[in-house]
Image 1 (cartoon, helix red, strand yellow):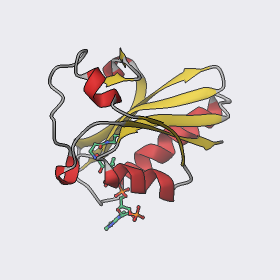
Image 2 (cartoon, helix red, strand yellow):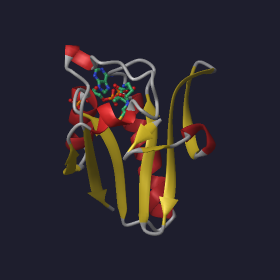
Image 3 (spheres, helix red, strand yellow):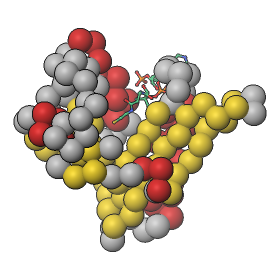
Length: 131
Ligand SMILES: CC(C)(COP(=O)(O)OP(=O)(O)OC[C@H]1O[C@@H](n2cnc3c(N)ncnc32)[C@H](O)[C@@H]1OP(=O)(O)O)[C@@H](O)C(=O)NCCC(=O)NCCS
C-alpha cells in the first residue's frame, strides 16, 4: 500500500483475522512506533456486519497493551464509509494531504482514478485517536 509518499507492506505487520463459520472474512494490521500505533490495513470483507468495528477494537486493545497513547491511520477522500466508521468511534481528522493519492500512483501504478461513490480519488486524510 502507498501512503505518505512511501510504500508499506501490511502483510508483514502484526494483525488480526476475523473468522466466520471457519472462514476468514476480514483482517486488520498495525505497527507500533514508540507511543504511536498505526492501523495499516483494515478490510471487513462484507460491510455492515460489525466486523470492521470488532477488528478496529482488537487493534485498539493491542495498541493499549503496547502502551501506545495514540492510534492513527490514513484513509482517502472517497472512503466515506471508513470516515464514518472512524469518526463515530472516537477518531479525529488530523491532516489533509491534497493530491497525495495522485502522487502515490507514481509508487503504486494500479490506483484507480475513481474511488468509492464515484468520487475522484485524490487526497489522503490522517485521523487519530488518543488512547
Ligand atoms: C471500512 C470498513 C472496514 C468498515 O467495516 P464494516 O464491517 O462495514 O464496519 P461495521 O459493520 O463494524 O460498522 C459499519 C456500520 O455498520 C453498522 N453495523 C454494525 N453491525 C451491524 C449489523 N449487524 N447490521 C447492520 N448494521 C450494522 C455499524 O453500526 C456501523 O454503522 P455506524 O458507523 O453508522 O454505527 C469496511 O467498509 C471495508 O472493509 N471497506 C473496504 C476496505 C477499506 O476501505 N478499508 C479502510 C481503509 S482506511
